[in-house]
Image 1: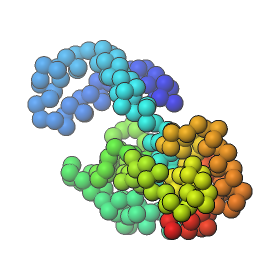
Image 2: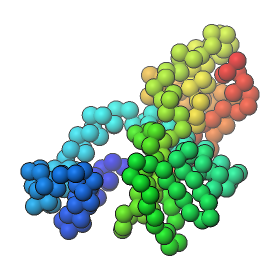
Image 3: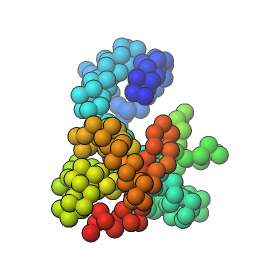
Image 4: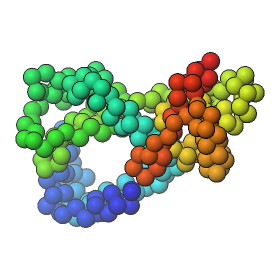
Amino acid sequence: TFAEEIALVRSTPPEAALRDLSLALAETPGASGSDAGRAMLADPARTVREVAGLLEQVWERLVEPDWPRLRALLEADIAYHSRRLAEVGFGRLLGELSPRLAWADSTLTVGGKRGAWQRDLGGRGLVLMPSVFTWPDVIGGHEQPWQPAVIYPARGIGGLWTEAADRTPDALARLLGRARADVLCALDEPAGTTALAHRLGLAPSSVSAHLAVLRDAGLLTSRRHSHQVLYERTPLGIALAVS
């Protein structure tokens, strides 16, 4: 949860904060020598408190109101790319994540503005992390002691704020009912009840009932993913939604 993550930020030891602040400020010419930069480096413990407070404000005002929709998109991306990993393998999957990623001779190349860097994973593995905030860039997290990671744009960002009702065919609405047809058409990517309810402006209980009917009719399948059940369209459901 966000509360758990922000608690970890607040517990950052001052010596670790000083190291990370020095690395971050070094990315911007002149930042370390500015009044703000010197103040941050002089009292890293205070800086941690201030940064944690700002992060909390960003979460509450900008992210939390839309978190069900954002989380649904991220979880759908993970589910999709997990299947693709099993189907096509690691090297090809990286190319599908972004044209800025390439895998050859056991070496991952991350294209970007910072130039080339290398890191031997040493058997630690690589975290692939979807994000709704990075498009079109890919970010390589490679500083010690953090787990090696690649942060890439999640699938479906282009349709993130498209209202499903705007795409529901009138003929399908007459067949299934407007609300039930909206639920079916909203499932361009796998999603859970809460995310669909938030997206469509419906009560979760109503969405749950519609999902059950659509699943029983063979238009949806469901599977458990972490803490929730995700629904996605069957081939028959896809054919109806896009007709």
